[in-house]
Image (tube, rainbow, N blue to C red; front, side):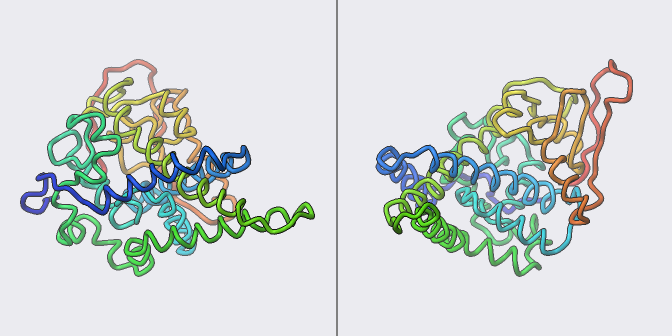
Length: 309
């Protein structure tokens, strides 16, 4: 796949930078004063659900097409993934283009978030120090053309902030009305609390937890496959990401067309379990799984051909 001319020239995106600053400021200024354990657990649950949705639907469905599902499940999963509010790449079209470029040019100067440009860059600074190519419609036409024909995905991509505003309204209403369940009065302060935690704390947690894969899984860990980039498998990321398949990142880069790639018995995948559960109701099907644990336990590492980008 080709990039647009001058793609790797880093440019400063003011709006993305202000977005990052604003989220940090709200969390630092308001979250400590509005803290309750229920609000914090709500934020944690939200980022787990939305983060799982991004990993399953934006990543493995829309980017790699490693399983099939009904159109309404795809739309719901794409919406939930967008609610991570993950900087400039929360929307499905931009996410897919970014991730396909990442796979095609991993750990080179054309990689949008490689740690070879610095740990801080890979963790967060790439949100506003973006490669020039991501400002060009030509790049999305080349790398996410299949999504550009889907009105729902395009709508989400163009209305990331509007979607988050709708989520904020839900958080406020839920928080303000919650006391009614125990006979109390409507509490606007509690509504504000759930906006701060359900939107801003959730978002900040998501940025650091999700983006940690770009740092940890390209710097430390073990490798099952001799791929042409620096991807690794990591127990730490398996803990941070709640057992997602992407924790075994080297496996994924070697066989990116599969939903789950299992080379060692301990390389578990909670995401696959979620899909298998949905499959019981006929909501998903054709999950691509590569399980090599039944083969010989000891054999030399080898590079396998990638399966799509």
